[in-house]
Length: 272
Image (tube, rainbow, N blue to C red; front, side):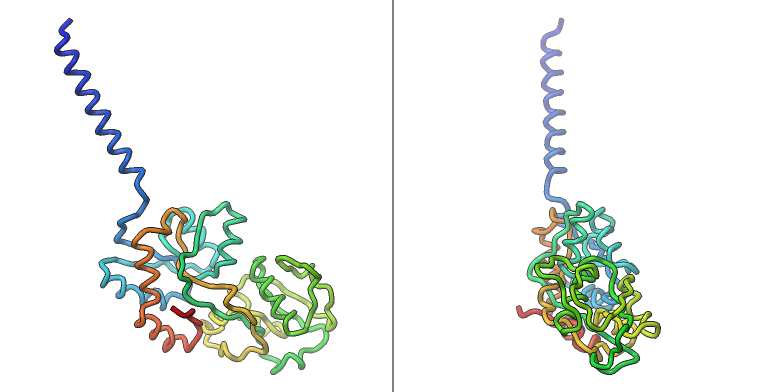
């Protein structure tokens, strides 16, 4: 046996294994740490806002594209399975509810950006006092936004919820003195349903997107700050530089000025 050749073969094998090990370490590095191309999931309601961020991110050296979805839940599905890099459309409790139901690992990165209000609207009545007994009110059918809608009615004294109610549904209504009837539907349908119901609870953004006066509510939510909106990413990317730069871009003064002028105060930005 040629021991010199055997020794050389062993050394070569060790070198190959070491190289493979280095490659493995690279694969284990934080995912997307130095990412320069970013895809954002949005909805019609936030599409123009995301578009305003594209040139700001370009100044930072990023190429940003966006995909528009017709269902907010699907934006989170896309982010959770890696089809997109970030989401800009949902509020934090909605994202948390998605995580619980789908074993998701999504996070909303601080600082949060803004809140979007929710209100009770009607095309038949001009005040809550005019709502008749037995009136039909449209609600959103996802658990988190149904809870938010019912608390708007509760805060207005129109219904009473059971004591110590967590995430409220229509089954948690303890008192309904006006015998309101509730019709639940996808949140994007709540504005379209206005001609067919007595009143509907909808996001300001959906009213705005339908070219309706989002400030014409009969009553609105009292604590929109409990439903912050911001950049949503997978937890493993939360500390990546590109994420911090994206959050910064959405808070950029040029983007905030655009949001104020284009959306007319729809987005209630939090203080820096």
